[in-house]
Length: 304
Image (cartoon, rainbow, N blue to C red; front, side, top):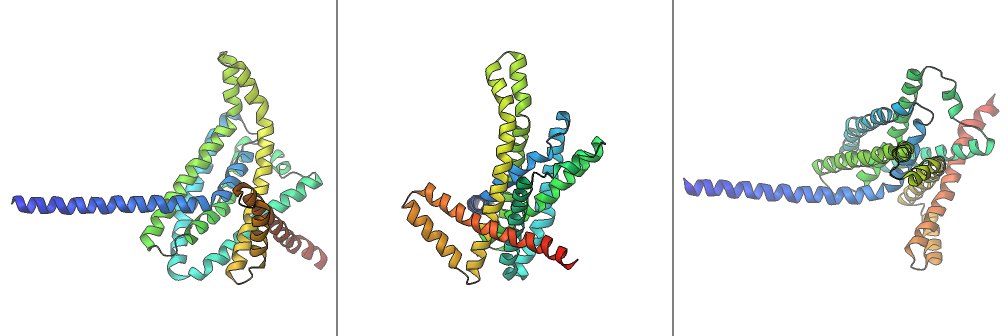
């Protein structure tokens, strides 16, 4: 009886050690894959605050909460099962899908640049809506649609880092990355959009009025900077994905050119090498975005 109990406890301990090792493996794989998706995460965090700009301050956090829940649905209920199906039955399709997403990000970034140069704004249509509930619903649905594209890129980049893992491990890592990135992104976004309220509280309470006024004054600058960072991230991340995809299919000239330029300029300096790589990817992203813009806008106009 005692020996049977000891054997059972040994089995339980072995299972526990195996589970702990699996958790460690999932955490390590999720960290590595999540780092690869960092550019898209920056883009996601930079783009989202624009969806609550101009809305009632009392509705900012509830709106971010709705977008965050929509983002989790995108990742866990739509993209995770789709990614596992691709991994099981059509691994060849992962890179083309990544490249399509990269082309879309490049297109979005280039369109924003063109709008900026023309003095146009995508917010004009939203400003014409006078019903707050309708405006909120429109902003939330628009943010969730954009998140679907960015989340698809995050999940595809993550999956591409797990080619030798089993289906169960892939699913677990995708879920961990999806949940962690969503919490981080929307936690940061919530902090950003409430910075002015925090500043006003510091001023009104008298605890740190100088810091409070600095926070309030910094908000417009921060939002403009985030918009610029989001646009730049779309272009360099999209271009980088296209460059890597082309190399995968044997067109490795752009990747070698960017790598050689980064090595020559950086000369062992990691920051300089990254900067040159980002600029090179950005050039490819702008070229890709312009091609898509031309295909979507110029060709139909000529046909008419």
